[in-house]
Image 1 (cartoon, rainbow, N blue to C red):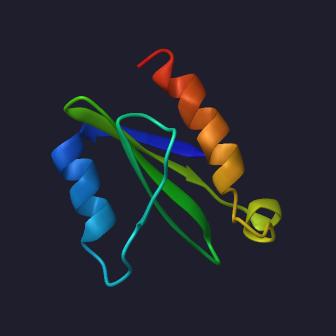
Image 2 (image 1 turned 30 degrees about the vertical axis):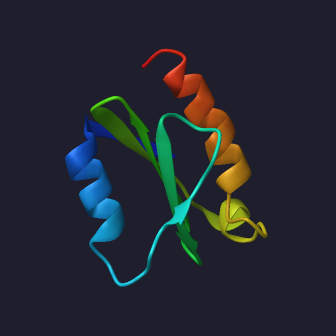
Image 3 (image 1 turned 180 degrees about the vertical axis):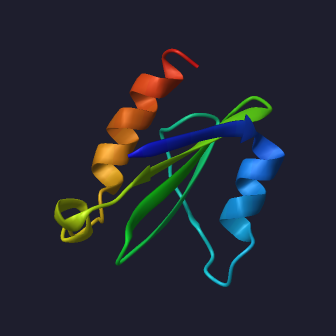
Length: 83
């Protein structure tokens, strides 16, 4: 797992700069976007003008049907409680 914190503008820019369109995720922060695939999941979360990227990956995560999104959402909510 890794967490990258920064301005939402730069965090969202990373989410939307590729060919794949991220999925909107409800119930996490003011806004959340998800990109997942065979190498785990990336959850981009906004609260106000700030945001963070939470990444989960590894063999056990990669094999999950949601590529770890449920676990990321739980971790993101814990991070937001202290953000």
